[in-house]
Image (cartoon, rainbow over all chains, first blue to last red; front, top):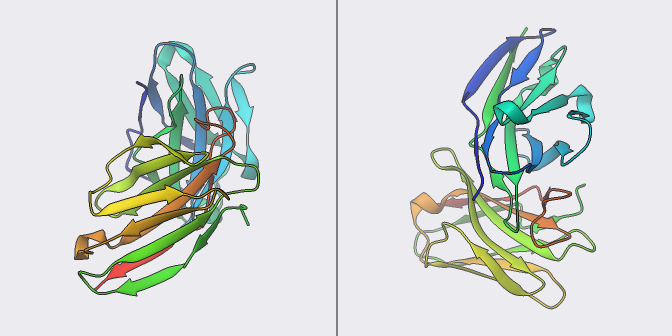
Amino acid sequence: AQSVTQPDIHITVSEGASLELRCNYSYGATPYLFWYVQSPGQGLQLLLKYFSGDTLVQGIKGFEAEFKRSQSSFNLRKPSVHWSDAAEYFCAVGAGGNKLVFGAGTILRVKS
Amino acid sequence: DSGVTQTPKHLITATGQRVTLRCSPRSGDLSVYWYQQSLDQGLQFLIQYYNGEERAKGNILERFSAQQFPDLHSELNLSSLELGDSALYFCASSVDRTGNRNGYTFGSGTRLTVV
């Protein structure tokens, strides 16, 4: 079965700085990959997804993610963080006939 | 509005009581997934239904049960409630059995407080 690891529990960045959130997965073949964002007290919202084609995918709110098969990674990036990006971010992987598996999440804090 | 409707949004109840959480999936979605989110446990998968049938089971306590009805809405029943059951309960839906191609659509959750 697939698994996913988000190594960073918390990350703090300054407003206007670039952001990279890490996600590593374990699966033998190419999985389906997702990033979700959760604002406090809200449900999870899909930011972007990857399942084939161009390994750099664009999402909503100016986010992008790059699939790197050799590193089993799907890191989320944003060139310039805004205070409203403060939230928790979840990476998820889907594979085979199984439901999605979510990582433990990374809490992003933005300092002004 | 994601299209997934959860009611109620907030629920406060006493220990030992029983509650029912309701979820209406996005139109056209056949799968419903239930998750529990707490500060100490994070996002925990509870159970999945696909077109009325249970398809996957996670860390769901025996005191908890769920079902999906013919109109595809789902209910999560929590009984003999304990303080530790206080959490956000999310429902998500997908059009297929896995959500692999399009991901899940989440509702805004039900916040359960057990006092």
